[in-house]
Amino acid sequence: MDNLIIHSIRATVDLPAGQEAELLSICKPLSLNKGDCFIREGQLPHKFAFVNSGLFRYFYVDDKGNEFTKGFFPEGSFLSSYSAMVQQIPSYFSIENFGRCGNSGD
Image 1 (spheres, rainbow, N blue to C red):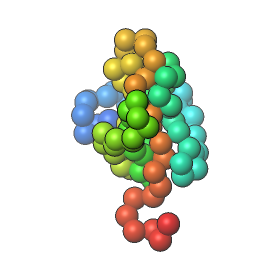
Image 2: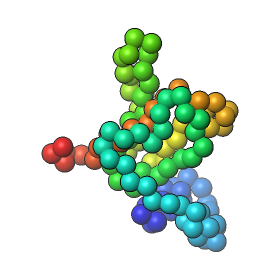
Image 3: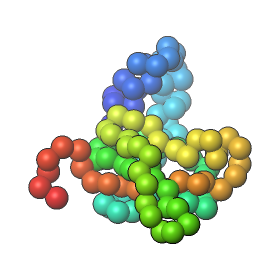
């Protein structure tokens, strides 16, 4: 997992090796089952995650109960309800573990 996180970060920014080690020291593994939410609509987000494996769906539900998928976070992506986290407001979206990437037979 560590190499995948660092590789993803290096693709975006030049991070000194000492800061790479510091970042990895505060990372904590989290495993979610298919259908579990990383964050639910209405929660105040205070964390972000790195998708080591699987696929996550970013979605919202309208006032009639219809679900709309805004996007997906595949393996190697960072996920969060970023706008809500920065503004310190409840998330309008939910982020759910949608399963594995590719054809896994699920």
